[in-house]
Length: 146
Image (tube, rainbow, N blue to C red; front, side, top):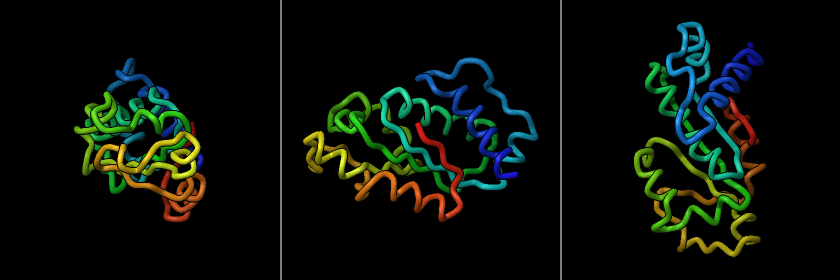
């Protein structure tokens, strides 16, 4: 059954992977029922497109009545440089602040020269993205990697 949930989640992500959702906006009852079984979601990503897409998927799930217990995005790679104060992504993220947790890989920050003080409010720093995703999996999250 876990593979079915991962497949359903992958389909939803594909639908919502742009900054706008194209195609299906209504999930069928079976998809909603399956997704309700594990209401914790974790994503590891490296691009602005996927960051916006995963946040759009959050909207899709909520709009379709999927109850979300936890929703976390783990960010690594160059997109870390775009999560700074007064950026477009800060404005985009305001709607999700307090609803979606975003963890930033400290290794990526160090390699890309991003200081903690330059990040916008509402972001958490994690030692490594990979370890954080393993923690999420250990705690029963459905996880996807981009």
